[in-house]
Amino acid sequence: MSSAELFNPTTGSFSNAGSLGQPMEGGASVLLRDRRVLVLDGDSRDAETYDASTDRFTKAGRQLTRHLDGRAAPLLDGRVLVMGGVSEDFHETASAEIFDPAGATFPATDSMAEALDSGDRCDDLLWGRGL
Image 1 (spheres, rainbow, N blue to C red):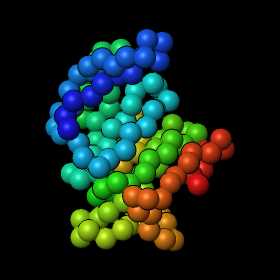
Image 2: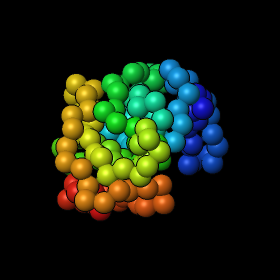
Image 3: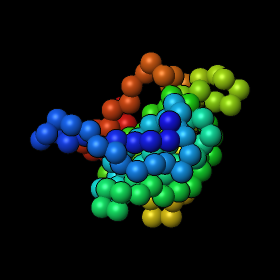
């Protein structure tokens, strides 16, 4: 899907929010500290950010590995932990990486001990760790 919508909780209605540069599938999204939204494509590994003040999507780098139906959690320092999902060879993956909004990069980090699949959860905790 390459379209996006905004929900207004005051009116209980949706409105168009511009178009992504390409269709996204099986990804995740997370609110960044600067109020942009990071949108991750779980299939192609591409990423975009949405800025509500300009109503525009902008390319935001490329994930190192595929995280189809993976998870994303904001960290206290403004970066985002991206992990789990299904890899290119269609197996659940324990791989993880971190999105750094300052440079729109995805530096690698340690993998998880066990794979995280589409049925598992990741909750961001107040002290900046994913659970």
